Length: 452
Image (tube, rainbow, N blue to C red; front, top):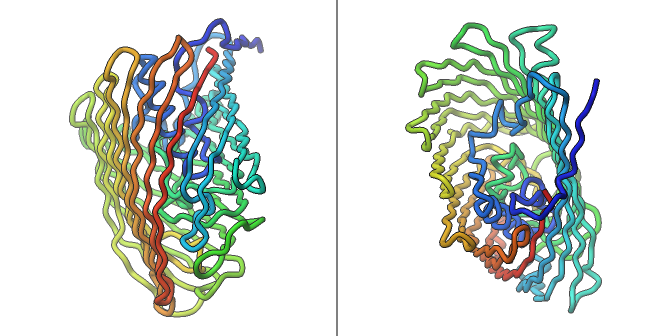
């Protein structure tokens, strides 16, 4: 088999920097930077940003394989250099320290398009240096992989589709929320639903396999299995209450999807999950959940799409009574040329990985939008809200967070962008009557370059 190999380095061009797809390793402020940088550069290049629900087959965001011609492998390197002022680098209420941070983030992304297989791969590092607290200097890492195996399995089972994905990050500052690009790229938000943990080295990983089988021309059966974990190592700050909780979660989903019309799809699904914890303060050792969901998705126009989901989830602890909660979500995506807008609401049972080991009934809302002001200057913004409460009796635990990001991106020369970003977050938690809360302000000036 012959391969065509291309490193896109003939000249600088503006494109979605690879940082946005998987880099959350720079922490919460890094998340805000990446969220803005990626969207701004995508607009500058004239390419419409990826919208939720437009990532291709399944939830993986994997490019569809070419059916003819030799396989083509493309490699896209990029780098971002930033200066940040952060009012709370330890991410706790009682030990606030502000600092100036220099970051260098090299990234590389690769895309393979072939007759039998297609996919994408991203990997990068983040080096951070602190002026007032040099003991906090760190090097973070991230990686992501998406594979579309449809054409391979179709040779054996013609109506079967299979996709694989894996996302991993190593960072001392896990973000409280996913940015829109990470969400659209298929990353799980199980560990990013508005809970800001204190500063500690951590690794989190989510691996998934999903597939579908066409039963009838308009009916298909879908299935997905995901394995996620989050582990903590060196602790740089003491939580205001409780502790860090190593967490592992597995989920299996099966459902039937029907295309009622060209614009409407209905999906009925069942999901089983198992979450287990390391040593934590209070709470449970593990719990399972069973949920049933009905989802309706609709293509309103060529540029506007949305979905609405509703159902119920029963959470069963290893000891104690079962908790029953309504769950669901809603999305709305509009992309008109270079003007994107997205809305996402989610209500789900998720594991608590901070303060205490328990099941949380978690609500999150996110908004994001962008607008080109001039051919060289673009603006974007996003807002997030999260609220989570213990689903089991015997543990009183609540999290609350709200925040937003605004930014400007300016094309200095083809291939190099200057970005100015401001991020604000307010976090609050209550554990067994002990309250703590803090504000965090992060201002960043960044220069990004990409070779294509």
